[in-house]
Image (tube, rainbow, N blue to C red; front, top):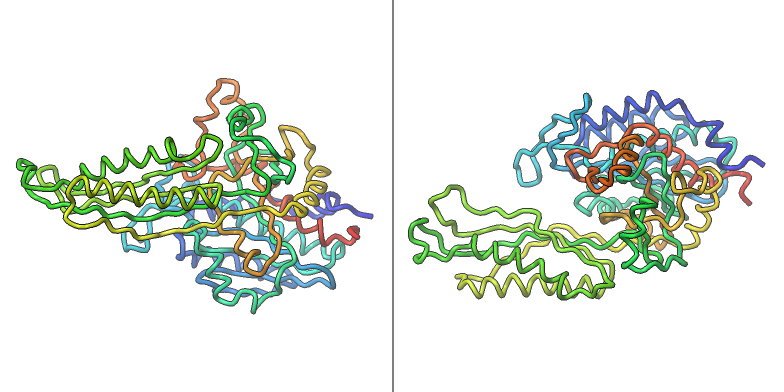
Length: 449
């Protein structure tokens, strides 16, 4: 019997071409819901592989591709395709210099600051690997290139646009994400028996470059909103004739930080971040409004509800304390669900990954860290009641990581969404390709009974 690891090793295509393709995607990012060129490039590459049926323009610029290869299960592999409004500062020769207008019509710099370019490229390479290894497996491969992950809307948009009326409903839904860990490491998914409490998270993070998750939780919820607080503008020299919304907003920012510190239990986790505060245009005018953009994360549904209520309570109270002429305005902008990994799927994947990636702190690690951010990936599975699994892998240059570890400066390594975040092309790409292919063959390889 030929095992998944042997199939991957024997059929992995040369990755030199895909390294250049990665650099192309990195230098040509597109904002959420504007991934038109990216989708066309993906379609062009897939059309050169035998057997793929391509379904473009699902839920916007989403794309699905199906490779039917005899009887068997249907396995879904997903990559996200959108970039972020970040001005790249990596200094790489293939750094993005692109600018685009966002949904509000404001021109922004654009960067693949979350690694979605690595996801796209590795899934295309894995598609080539699996297409070339069709004699070794049986079943149906379903590829999803999903738009608008950063807005939390892309997966649902594809489902709502009839994704599963066009393509087969998968039996298992799988995906992965590059993270700011040492490249070459492979981080497995959380297992049901993981029981480290949050007091041990920081202690576990340094020596193993990972943290523990709680049972099946892989990613927190996320709720984002734009909050407008109102005042009465006027001359900067006569603040007594005004109601200053900047002072209201500043007090609100400080008070919001007490929610997690004083209303969330020490053994629980939540985050409240004010990512933007915009008010006024010049130094001698007190404006009429101030606008805050707020992001909220939680790892328990009850905590999520409590923190959301607390944010509204604090904002309304600060406005009342300032004598605001009208109540604040709340406009939700993003919502991400909790993401859970299926324990049985994790258990089965662990066996395959452990064979291919030696189990050690430098390669394959069981009970790896919870995803640092949030994800809408699981909607592709939960919408049709199918099990999901999402893994993470390292993308930081090995020498840079080892040097930072020796110097005790790991916390200075750029993380996802940083203007300095850029995965080392190799060995990151090879690990990502192998992971997609191995995950598929865990269920579809002919040697699997």
